[in-house]
Image (cartoon, rainbow, N blue to C red; front, side, top):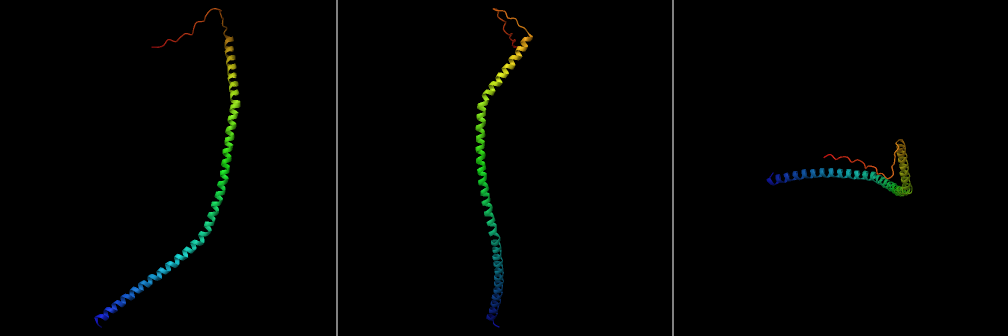
Length: 140
């Protein structure tokens, strides 16, 4: 065996090992691609019904929001009507009620003062002035 034959034999063994490694790598890559395509198919099979259900849920939520919007506008209208009613009632009955309450207070006060006055009789002298109220001496 000459040196060229030995070199050729080494190169042939090297190429055989390299081809074996490449074949193993390609087989594993093919298995990984098969599993990936199987996984994508399963995800697609499960995702399509889920997307349909999600679409139905969004439609239902939209319908509920439309109802809530209607209810909100009705509540706003009722609130405005209640505010107008309370303003009308306050302006219609408020003034007279305050006057009646003030009149009642005045009558009660007059009756109380008259009852106290009946207990003390005062003598009024015509042409004579009454002394003014005593002033408190300021403390300095």
